[in-house]
Length: 216
Ligand code: HEC
Image (tube, rainbow, N blue to C red; front, side, top):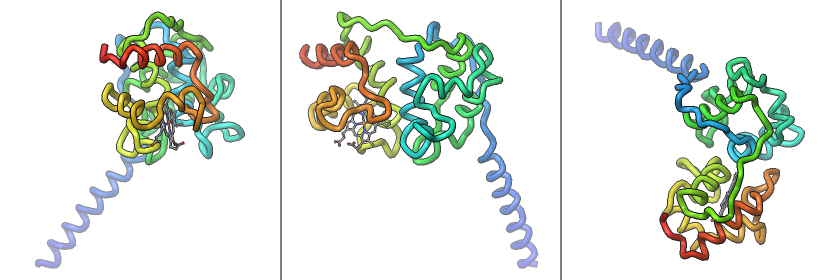
């Protein structure tokens, strides 16, 4: 009797494990709330850095690797402008294994951004950048979230530093040579193949540092 119960128990456990495994490989299609899509999503500031930091690093989808997600043309091979659900890039973004461990899969906000950009016509567009705007919340944080947090976030961030909020960013400036890296003086960040951020974004950060790094 005891043996039988153990067997049934094992069987139930097996079925349970199998069902878990089955779920694990299916993309979880997020429900995109279209009202949360920002207007005028910019390819060069928002989509490209997201791709480059999450997907287009060496050994994954950069350069000779197919699909090459490090350039507009490479990305466009997977995109049907205006039709996110018919685009392989969107399928790719909602796939629960992309990017693979130890990176964290894209979150709903990032998937929404990709969806919205395709819906808005998948343009190769650039957002304006004004060197007179250099507050932490108005330029420094959004820039760092766009260009750096793909690698510097989560439980196992690159270089062992997170760059997600004010205190983490100030810490990296004071102790980890952040400014030298974004100007390419040593060990450029973002690393190749991305290349440095635009001179305007770098100047905004410099002006904010020179102003005493206020949490404004
Ligand atoms: C594609 C992934 C990737 C992106 C994007 C990226 N980094 Fe890094 N970063 C790394 C890796 C990997 C390291 C650790 C190895 C090294 O120092 O080169 C690192 C290291 C660093 C370090 C040094 C940490 C230490 O302990 O010395 C700083 C500071 C840094 N990154 C800042 C940035 C900033 C600022 C950005 C955005 C402008 C950025 N990174 C974008 C991958 C990335």
